[in-house]
Image (tube, rainbow, N blue to C red; front, side):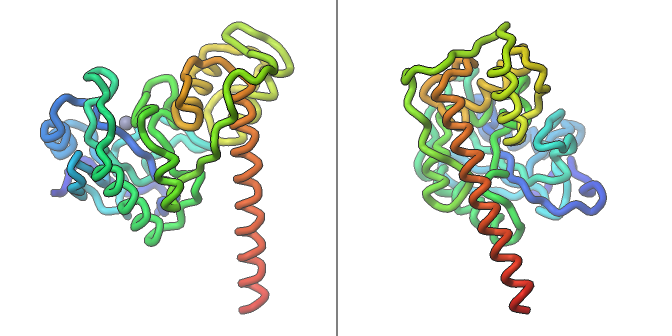
Length: 255
Ligand SMILES: [Zn+2]
């Protein structure tokens, strides 16, 4: 089911990121038609129906048009470095139903397959909302990131409990604590400026972070639970990288 909406990846880039979306349309078939329609200017590598059927619209080596204006970890051409998966779900505008188990099983298996064909670090399996926090909410807080992690897909730590004290940072605040939180979000990959001011861009990044990693409450407030969860993710990602670096050093020595 090829889509005409595709091109070359910039500079022959190999994909090292997966971006998950929901379709956000009442009718899944209509969403699929749109992604294949000449002139719609949108596409995806894969489309996953509620019943678990998977369709491929663009080859993994090619650049699909799913992310739009986006940013992650210094990169703005997210379409050139990523593989996009559209998950059929009407989204927040149409009641936002739960993702069926069969659909999640299909998405998980698909991601595992993508990971065998490409080098995708766990922390680069992301939501569209992570790479475009001010524009997008998909796939949203009902997406079961923890279930995927349990099958070896993506990055997840158990969120720190809510309401255990600590400073509460909010829109309009200006302080060193805001700067520290901003720097942590930037270090993880989010696109914002470390200007010590809790501006609307910071609010959007915090809300996107919560939607992915602390889905119990999405309020854009930098509470201690949010910040502790972010610290733990950074610490764990650092440990994973150290182990990976040691493994590649060892492989070099052994060869
Ligand atoms: Zn999307």
